[in-house]
Structure formats: structure tokens, C-alpha cells
Image 1 (cartoon, rainbow, N blue to C red):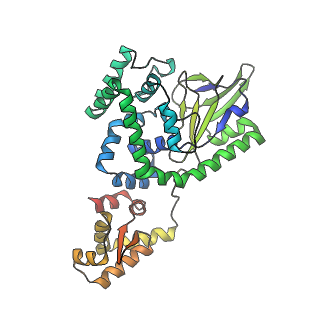
Image 2 (cartoon, helix red, strand yellow):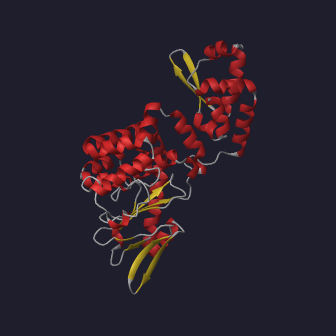
Image 3 (spheres, helix red, strand yellow):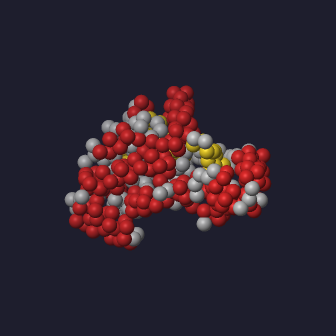
Amino acid sequence: MTIDITGLPHERISFCPSPLGELGAVLHALAEPGHHARLHAWTTATAAALKPELADRLHQADFMWRFNRSDILLPARPRETLAEELDDLDRMDDEKYVGSALELSCSRHYADGAPSPLVDERMRRRALDLANARGPHRAAFVERMLVDPSGTRAWVRRLLEDCDEAFFADTWRRVRGGLAADARHKTELIRRRGLAGAVADASSAMTLEEDERGARIVVDKLALGRTSAEGTGVTFLPTAFGRPHLVAVHAPGWQPVIQYPVPTSDPAGPAPVETVELRLEAVAHPLRMRLCRSLARGAYTTGELVDAHGITAPEVSRHLSVMKKAGLITTRRRGRYVLHQLDVSAVARLGSDFLESVLR
């Protein structure tokens, strides 16, 4: 896939993190965890913690990020906050928004600038057929978007805002500093080594080609596409959750955007070997495994655990101490009570089989 940048000033080429772009990558990782083995612990823990109602809404709309990433989730002009980027989306006209949102698969019409299904009956039938093939929930959602685009757009915004409140805000706080640092590094590389150096540093699958015909950014993907950045620019979005994907917006009428994975794609980072040993020893005891099962479902006091498991308070306290030292539980005080709860994300890093067994 090529992006023609002939004559484009370097100041029109930007590297910048985007909260909406990262949320799109996060939602894809949740929808297709098999694509993201290094994020398995995070996706398992986050999916397990989702409220059923939110999980159901994500299922209805997941073709916007499961199969292809909708272009509306990859802003050409990133903002500081998710709310600002969602405000920008609200200013987009219905035809462009719906045409992008209902890009359900690797469409042969994508590079042609096909008309929106809101105004073209053939594209409308195609969108409905593809949605029906993927189940009644998605079909109902697509039909609703075609009948009531403004109401469905508001529904999508609320969904993304609810994801932000449920899990993404905390995730974004942890990764945005690293993404901003990577973007600054790429900008400095343009100054010191030229655009070719920055592009190559972003991904070994990207190159800058320059000859008598002009200059092009070439993205090595198993897909063909061609676009021009003339009159607009090119935006590069670093992502902590995107690996192994290298996503490129190249539809006619859209500013080219490339989302590339930063070198460290596991936002939590690897745990020290000593910590892993402590955690494995902590969960190896059969009683502590049963305590994990209780603590995975909610916060309990020592007294409640005594009643639930039929053991003495000193025994419970001793086992909780082992688990806390291993970083498997969190505690908080509520009045005169101390509540203990399993840190599901830490347990998930030990393995999904163990986590699923305590959540079963």
C-alpha cells in the first residue's frame, strides 16, 4: 500500500498519540484476543470484569473494530482527550460517518470511494447482507444505523464513553506517556535523519521510496491500496495495543493515517522472575486457590472468609498475607472493616486456565 507524499512539507507529517485511536486498538484486542498473545493476561482480565450489559453492546457493534478498524476510530487530527476526539466525530456528516462505520470487511469498494449506504441502495443491501451473515445482533444494529443514523451515532458515543469509564481511562493513563515519548522520538528523527529514518524506526514493514516520479511511503501489507496526501498530510499514531497490526487509512476523501505498534506492546511489562515464583507458590496451596475463587467475585472481610471456608481467623490472615506478598490481592478499608479482593489482572498474567478455574 502506498501513500504519495510528493511535495508534502515535513511539517504536514505528524507523529502523535490518539486516545480514540488507542481505544479502537483496545477494542479490537478484546474482540480478537487470539491476535494479541502478548496481551492475553490483560484481555482476559478486562473481559472477565465487563458488566454483561456493556459486553452485549460491544458485541452488537464489534464489526467496527473486529474485522477491519473503522476509519472513524483513527483520527487524522489527534486531540488531548477522548471527549475532544468524540466531539470531532460528532461534527462529521452522516454519510461519511455511516459509510466508514459500516465498512464490515475487506471491501473491494474501499479504495474506490464507494457511496455511503445512506444514499446508495446497492451499498445499503451489501451492508445489510454482510451484517446478517454475522448474526442477528449485528444485523439489528446495522439496520438501526441506516434507519436512524443520528440516534445510533449517539448510541455509539455513549458506548465508547462507557468503555472509557469501565476500563479505558485507567489503561490510557498507563500508556499515554510512553506513546507520547515515542511520537517525540520519531519527530526528532525526522529532524536528525530525515523522514526515511523516522518511517523505518516506526516499523520495518514501512519504507520511504524517492525517485524521479516523486516520494512515497510504502506499507508492506497483504493488501493493495494507493492514496495521496496532497492537500492534507499524513498522521502516524503510535499504539501500545496494536501489535502485530499495522493499520493504514487510505480511502478517498480521508487524510492518510497509519497506526503503528510501539516496541513495548505489553503495557504492564514482564513481572520479575522472583514475583512469578511467589505467585505460583501462593496459588499452589489448595485453600488459597479456594480463597482466590471467593476473592475474584468481590471484596471480603477476614470474618466473612472465616465463615465461608470454615477455618480460623489466624489461618485466613496467614494465607492472605502470603497472597498479598505475592501481589495477588488488594486491600482497602471501609470504616472499621478491611476488605480483601483478588487482583484479577495479576492472576491473569499467571495463565488463563487458572483464572478461568477461579471464575468458573
